Amino acid sequence: MDRETKIKLIQEYSARFNALLQERAALRNADDSEESRQRAEAFKENAAQLRAELAALTQNPKRAEKGNATMTDLTKTPENNQPMEETFTAPEIEAPAETPAEAPESASVTPETITADDAEIPAADPALSPAESDAAVPVSTPDETPAEAPLDETAQLRAQNAVLEEQIRVLGEEVKSLTKRIAENRVQAAASAAPAAPVAPAAPAAANDPNAALRNEVTGLENDRAKQLDELMKLRIRKRELDAELGKIAAENKQLSAEIKLMQTQLIQFHAQPALLKQKRDAMRAEIARLKTEDADLITELSAMRAAVEQHKKEITDLSKPES
Image (cartoon, rainbow, N blue to C red; front, side):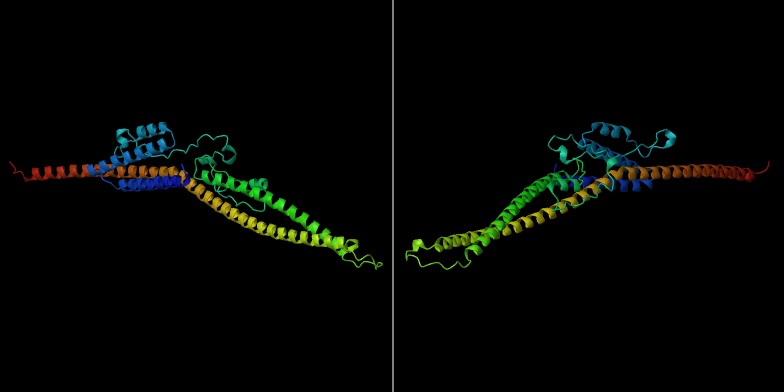
């Protein structure tokens, strides 16, 4: 399952949670009519269906059976010894078993271990070596969270970063070697260009000229120097290209870290839903109990008033009878 699909699932189930909460709020003020009973039955079925879907998604069918068994009618009263049961509890997301290839890149994270500190993941420093970069970026993301794909991409980018750093190191050594050779050639050219001591006239043949060999050597050194300068320029251009690629990799690492932080925050909010539902359920139960107590008091007062009315009617009837 890719990252986008997981995010969509989280958003979908969050929307359904909110819909259930709104329905519960509406049922708090519902009367004892047939329509209210039907709405309560529909609410119970929707909650059971959502529980079953989550259980199937997390491969935990026992939770679905438990949810269907604990769903009771919201209209039943404590006087019938049938208290309201929990209508919904979001299941824990169970991470699948790690494969040997994925184990070094990810770690299993349960809802209890996810904190706000875990969401703070700094971006990788492009100036660090691969080993230092691994140590500087503590990525702790569950396999079942939407951060699985960015982890794989981060590993690939780190490998590419290591290769580029090795190429830059080799190119730097070559530049140093070429610079050293250029300096040596300059020294040799300067020594060759020094004025020679006057010599006696020799034969007119060019082969007997002692400076001809030196001039040829100087020409060859100058040609070598020009070639080395050209190679040096090419190496500098290549180095600038590699620096640009490293900048792009650093920007991608920063973006991936931000996405991981966002998805971990969403996961924390997702696991906080059951606690909120439980608090609202307890508040609703307390409100229902209070209303039932008030209903009982009103019924008692109404019965007393009816008895008083009957008594007054009887007295009026007795008074209206003619005396014998």
